[in-house]
Image 1 (cartoon, rainbow, N blue to C red):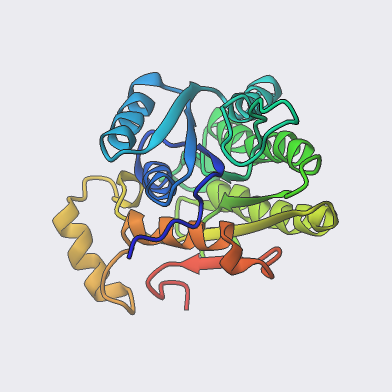
Image 2: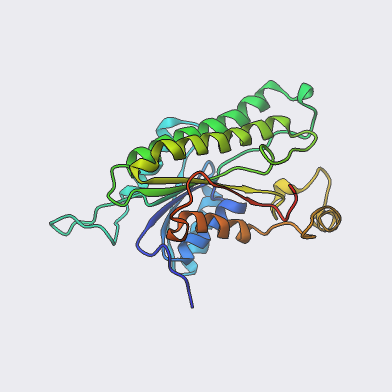
Length: 267
């Protein structure tokens, strides 16, 4: 039986042009949501929309840089301006709402010791990974707390941060630890407004980010067999399933949770 936990709801997913973000957007659409997909480059977003639509779903692509407050606010406006099937005014005119937001956009600049990291790489990671989540949260919460049904937000962090780290990833780990701390604080601040905020922290996942310099996918598979308790990395669909769970009514009592999806790698 097909699950439709998000029928009649609008979901916003940042960083949706590839990898985990695309998998999350496809999963929401498959469960009945209309999805706003966001990212900095239009071509990958258009491909995500095409994949959703060919499966019978509904999606809208919006090019945006989440490290800019104006873009974060524009994404929320795009979501609420979509015709919404659940809420109608007295005159029967569709009224939009933002029911779910997933802040997945992130960048990795590393591979070298912290002392050798270019200053611009630090600023880029801080701007996208931390400031971008902060600005997105502000815009999303301000809308959701005005809605009778509130809303759910899931921020995508990483096991690099509070759970683990790796050589050459000190700055990235610092930004992702900040995402988790920011999310927990915001969750406490705004659960009284009807806005639930949680975190998913993926470990090694089947995306290009988990490949070491010069490593092939086959080499990554062999490395995972030797180093991960599960013996393999996570699929993007498995991470998406965790995101949808936290965003769903099934997780109604989860507030400020950091759900680790890492094949046991941080144990």
